[in-house]
Length: 367
Image (cartoon, rainbow, N blue to C red; front, top):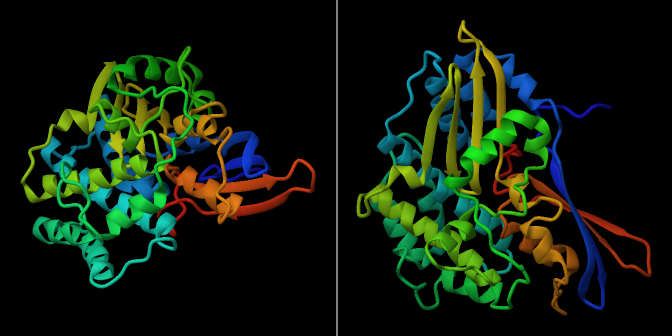
């Protein structure tokens, strides 16, 4: 049976584990082809809402990328102002990061006392058309991190999370960050190779990473351990709460960029919770969609020889842990936007399979 082009697919991870250490691994993003053609058949006015539904985990990011790219290309659509867009993206970042953290780490570090109510309050405050910045700041404070520059409060959920994540170094030989300076090269390859590039993006001599840890690296904070990678994500929650509450002024260029590349051709790049997202659109003379391409951050982080694959090589499993759980938590720190199908094999035994949803929501949307 042919895969449904409108289904998200999974990241397939296979690890050979011997004596508590990964000795061989393969990583493959199993995304169905045909999404570009399916979207291009739609009228421009329908595409922003369609992408928001298809890619529900980061639906706001996709909606904004679509409406900005289409409007810039010449479609009869009006994009929100940059300040409104940043507020929407900040709210999505709060929800996505908190949900991901709770789903992937909540069973190891349980919420106690008022923390469960604070998490619920933070998620509620960041949803909907009326985002409550004051309530969001109060909830984030209760969870343990009030501002992006402040350490986790002693004994808080955040401090316990960081302790549980651990300070053991992640063996990642390089830390190469995907930034807006790469857009020209990325878009040229995307325009030339189309869905072949969206499935396996690469830059010559590089395997860049994108997402919270990459954005932290741009500020001089290299996330070299699980705790530091998790801290980079949670610091973004605090920063987003400050932006929403008005205690921190945003720089829209750090969140969104868009440009016309030629007659009827435009792109929008968004810094989603999980990393840099690209939408590229080409309209004909009648403003009908000729081509619509989407490049998601997961394909960078989970490339066959990308950042996660490098971290998984020689990864050590703690004695009190299972290989599936440990690898799943490691994968979560690279922020996949789909589920991960994890297969652990003993080189001396038959393989055992385990599939675990790494996505941050029960809705399984692609990027």
